[in-house]
Amino acid sequence: MIEGLKICIPAQDLRQLLLAAAAHHTERATAYRTQVENLKQAQIEGMNYSNGNPVETLTERLDEHEDAETEMTFLAKYVRDGEEYLLDRSEVTELTGHGRQRGHRGRRGW
Image 1: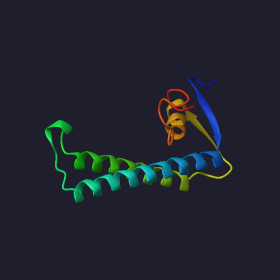
Image 2: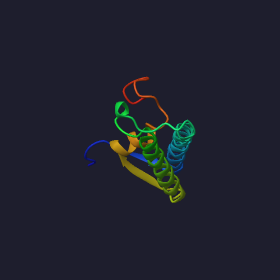
Image 3: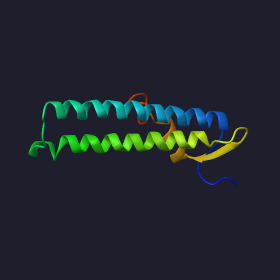
Image 4: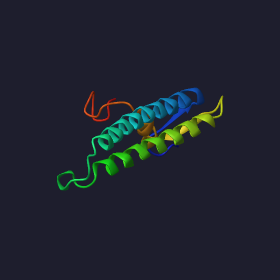
């Protein structure tokens, strides 16, 4: 008996989901990098109304997306062909939620 929500995903589908998630993170990292560069060129510094330093905050988000892209790409590289992977709901949500706008077609975009 399987306890909780579990789903078997073939290796090919999992690899595709991982690479799509990696692409999403690459896209977001690029957007944050552009914002950071623009703020630095404009010499915008942290101000009280922004709850701190906007360059620092955006750089942290950039780092998060770069780390996530590296992780998803690494995982995709080591998916074993011909296998099925048993994922729980949180893992499925993590993979299928990338690149979707919240609030669009349901809470997580499904």
